[in-house]
Image 1 (cartoon, rainbow, N blue to C red):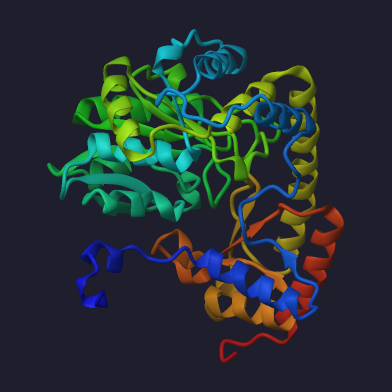
Image 2: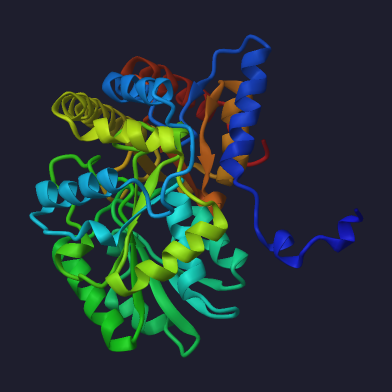
Length: 393
């Protein structure tokens, strides 16, 4: 088939640049180089043992077929129970849609809400796949420039400023990737009120809930029962490769979402759903909480170390496992520096161009998804890379 016959949308969906960094890191490792991985947003911990055992048992029990498109009833009940435990909410399990990863949850919402040519507002910087899903359904992402003055988050004022008659929704994230910043309960309520006034749907990515440090993340459902909420078993529960997430939707939307799920992917993996039931038991939660403490210790080491190297991180991240660092004072562009540091010192970092357009060339993301010992080595190597770095590199 001639390349000229590819759908035009393919040319407008950019590659996930961090995966190119990962590929280069793997190639260097194959050559015998010792690479410190700080590029991909994947916890270095394996899935907790109780969940693995449950998955193995599920396979032994023959849980290898289709499930209902909305997910196993027992898992939907368990997810609703999580909102009761964390947020004091009585959530109807009928509003929970189990999906193959958090990405599929956003795909469902995009297909449900966005007509061709219609727009969704989101912060810049933001997770790149969010805007690409909108392009896939022939919608448009409006990237709203944000900075440290708003904790890199959308505000009612920014929404009002960028809103027009083609907009249908607002997509926020708390904790956010790549910045790790949160929206408070009051800020979520203000976003919800603004969306209602404008006639917009509010979508909130809560995929990093559970991974917060010194503060509990509020769910938008505490203040807006009609919001769409994206979440996942990948981050807090360490189940990235199991491909399991969920969506909480208004009751009226569920039949349409079920129809879309049936057609797009039939159901989430049966074995993964059975395994995830064990994510909520006491043994698994204790393991996850210990790991949360480890992530906090890593952040508390890396943040001052990166600042001492000359990077600017004006807002302390309260969640996720990233630092979004400004290297303007160090000269050059972040893509060039990321290439320099992986080739010279074997540290894999993600350039800011993955996350949008606003000052992307002067930012990079550092993921603290490796051990403290490895982070210490990374800081030493980055320091050496800076000594040999110039904008001409």
